[in-house]
Amino acid sequence: MASGIRDKVAIIGMGCTKFGERWDSSAEDLMVEAFTECMEDAGIEKKEIQAAYLGTHFDEVNVGKAALPLSVVLKLPYIPVTRTENYCATATEAFRAACYSVAAGVYDIVLALGVEKLKDTGYGGLPGGAGRGVNSFMIEANRTAPGAFAQLATAYSAKWGVPMDKIKRAIAHVSAKSHANGAINPKAHLRKAVSEEQIMAAPMVAYPLGLFDCCGVSDGAACAIVTTPEIAKSIKKNQDIVMVKALQISVSSGAEEAYTKWDGAHFVTTRRAAQAAYDEAGIKDPRSEISMMEVHDCFSITELVTYEDLHISPKGGAIEDVMNGFYDLSGQCPCQVDGGLKCYGHPIGASGLRMLYAMYEQILDRVPEERKVKNARMGLTHNLGGVPWHNVAAVAIIGKD
Image 1 (spheres, rainbow, N blue to C red):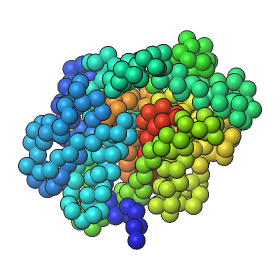
Image 2 (cartoon, helix red, strand yellow):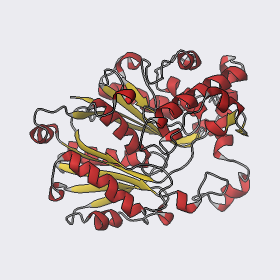
Image 3 (cartoon, helix red, strand yellow):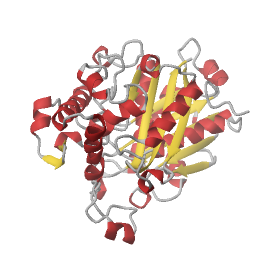
Image 4 (cartoon, helix red, strand yellow):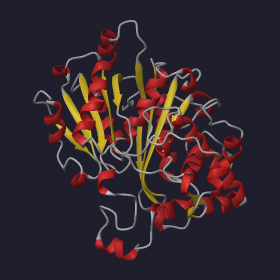
């Protein structure tokens, strides 16, 4: 009977570039930058890598449809290389494929790398963006990402009877917390602290989401090298080993947009992926057992709702937790410890691995004191691709052996 991925795979190396407007670097340059750090961390030779997975989303404006660029750029030793793509879960899919390859006993050491160059394209999530067909463009000509996700706020207000001004104050705290964390992270795209008052007074994008409630897009790359626990222990003698505890993905069936029973105030996929991940990892009480998180904060309201969908905050109780500092860097379950999508940045094909990199660095106690999460033993990452009523959600959990 299937038993899941728990403790069958170890991470022996990770690397991540600085995210931002990397005008001076090509996608290939970014791949090399992340891979170099990852290899130094892993302490292995390139010839030991037996397979690789490349995650990119916008293929035509990046490295193309195939995975060949990864092999050529990194001069990999004639091994199988496969490209993955699944919206904003693209890098997590690359990581999942690498982990499953090792867990299945097919390979001993596997590379997963995600990369995206978005600033050169001018992409900003506007109507008519890449990948939308003619019919979709004609029917949804005025739909934007902020407009779609802003509806979460009004639905949440209606469901739980929360005044909109209270929601606006809570999501301002969500954004301010991420800006504070990003300001002290040298690899983050946006490195300036912003007060809740500034966020509340910012120009409106799609009510109630203002300018500072929306994440931007970035250039960047991140990667990981995974292996069996036995090999990891032989390489990392007398060192802490980071193990993969759970990897779960849930994809919309169409029910949310086809039937009226969905309330519009939560993500069905996130709830399902989270519960499956906890079951796989053997987690009974995520509120007390999860040390820290990186969640898909494409918009501040998305992060707020996700707290509940991940079964950390009680239903209807996320605002109270936010305002009490539960998710602050000094709180019980810090979220966006590196600045999140909001401030670290969001190169779509790299984000999932960047999130894992943040958890990995904290678990191994490699961050300065000002950024450190106390007792960081178990980290969760969450990706969300699509719109609230039609999406893919990925949840990964990693922790100490």
